[in-house]
Image (cartoon, rainbow, N blue to C red):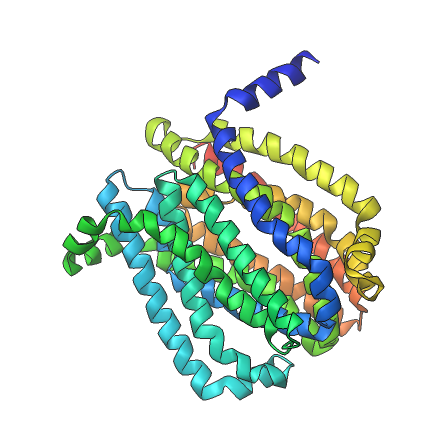
Length: 426
């Protein structure tokens, strides 16, 4: 009881926990509207339409991971406030370039891409990809700038605007029977609502923005060139490993199966969204400060590991016993397959909840090259599971068991390596 009391007092007095609470409570509220309307959406939109959304999101998340050149991670690193603002501008510039390139590709190859993904009806919605990529990239850049200046309330509110705005659009379009692409349109607009809020903090630095010269920005981009050289491709591979499964399932199984899987994946990811991301953002700020002062972030790493492990264990225990029936109750009997898939994937998500939050250690210690190698291994592990499944003609559930086990082992090894890096010795 004494240790528990001490732990509670630590939570009450900790600045770290105050910031985590602001972010996680804001994110929780941001997720409340989508969770509340999810039972309605699942009865308006079919599994095929959710599958189409999953394929669209796969493209957006993969391209969105490239769009800023990962310069947004560097926003937290320099001591000078001016450089933080300028790195935000560099991130946004990269986003505009990537968005323009994606526009050209979509204009030329939209039909071929839709067929390749296993859903020819997706072709018309691919024209929205450049807009979504632009919105996602700008949101990521502004998010990290607000993190740098510790405007955690702004981030929380932006997440609320993003999530609720997109959800309301999806609900309204569904109510008007415009279900074809309604989910995609809502998703496209969601980041726009969040960007409105986050941009206010950056625009407070109008003088710095206007005074920034191109040669100055070029020099700063060169200083942090390892982020686009290594981190960009690392996050691209990470995003690819998470989203290529939707493409694989669409081609090997069916679009409906993608819909069932994507719903399970989305809601199992809520703990990471609600808690993991908040811990990750606050940890990155504190670890960066600790590295500058002490040369290591071991204490911060272990503190987050201990706290998130408790959350992860509770998530695992509760989920294994109740998740399938919860999915049926919330989304309807038609979505029982989603509940079955969720129960299989829970151990993987419990481990990833902890590891993803702490994996930013690689960025804090500027280990972009090594992070890229780990992401290559992650993609290889995912592809390995898919190839084995295809060759052995596995059914969907057996494939998910293999996929979950393979990636769980990978994340545990990655966690150990991140801990070694946090010690600042290698």
